[in-house]
Length: 146
Image 1 (cartoon, rainbow, N blue to C red):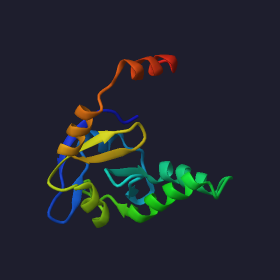
Image 2: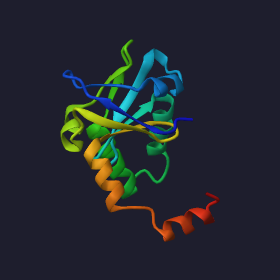
Image 3: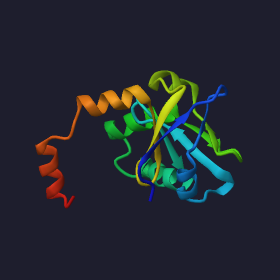
Image 4: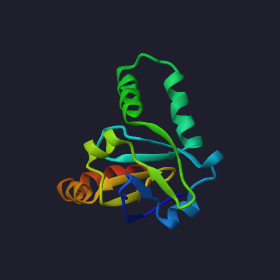
């Protein structure tokens, strides 16, 4: 399971070097392939292929014409690329996603259990400050066993 966050950099060729701790914890994938996409254009999401295949399979399940499902597929297809991690642990971030999420220079790579998210450093800090955990959030989480 992936957990925590680390700072990283996007290089001049628009590649992200995955922090070493995450590289050790990522599940083995055939040919080191990953699907890089976004469900909202605010951050990049890096999925090991087996994880992405489970998500992609859900697009084929009924109800196939659900508006939310169609919207999610539109976002993940528009921003998505199949890419390979090179021997130095670098992954290409797609141009449209880099531009929309302002992913360049220093970034934050956050674990999301089975995949990674890449955020513009300032965007994630602002988001955490503007939308902090509330007592209502804590109560809801307690109901779910957190």
